[in-house]
Image (cartoon, rainbow, N blue to C red; front, side, top):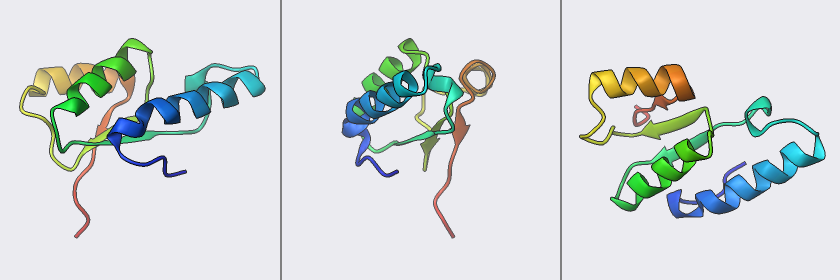
Amino acid sequence: MDMGQCNDAYSAIQVVMALANAFECGVNDLSFSMVLSWYGQKAVCILLTLLYLGIKNIRLGPNLPAFISPNVLHFLIEKYSIAPITTPE
């Protein structure tokens, strides 16, 4: 389900939380992922909010932000199942 741009992440979180409530499970027990397109600085705040909420399976791209070093990326992959994406060929 496409929920719009990165600044629409709050709406996507509300939908997923309502689904988790309806199915009586945790948000990360649902089969979903969020793609956070990295085009502006506001995406930093959105990413930090998603991490604070414990949201997993976030996809970042098409380019990773400069502050995500290989060690930080490894941590995010292990703890939050974050995956980088690229542009389609």
